[in-house]
Length: 182
Image (cartoon, rainbow, N blue to C red; front, side, top):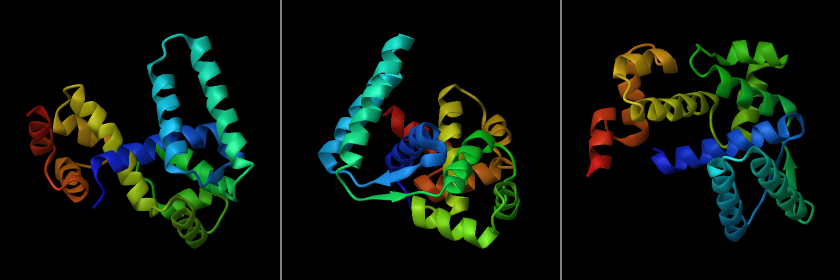
């Protein structure tokens, strides 16, 4: 079972990095202090309203990552893994199967599933569900109903949403948000 913070942090990091590095993605091993620094810069990027400053912060973050990436052992992530992640982020509300996604990426289903797990640490299905839950959390905060959220996030129905929520957070959506209000 993954904590809410783990899911949000993982998806945020992969979302940002997948869009920045897309076809030439690499996974870089970083120290806890480097992670904290990157998180701080990412938070500043998200909170910045001035587009020019936002772009400068992104360039600063990339140069910082590039600096320690060149001084550490890094693993090259195949472009189809990055493409799969971007596709899932953009189509989370649709029915996504490993076979269909593999066909779109022109690779074998088993290769996709094996390499996705190897390079992301998540099964393909877990990653899809986590993307859906990330969006569901946003929609809940906007005051949408469970029915609307289930429909808009690709859960199929309310029971699918509640089941996924319970699997990842250990409670129903209502219980989760009631506990956050206290």
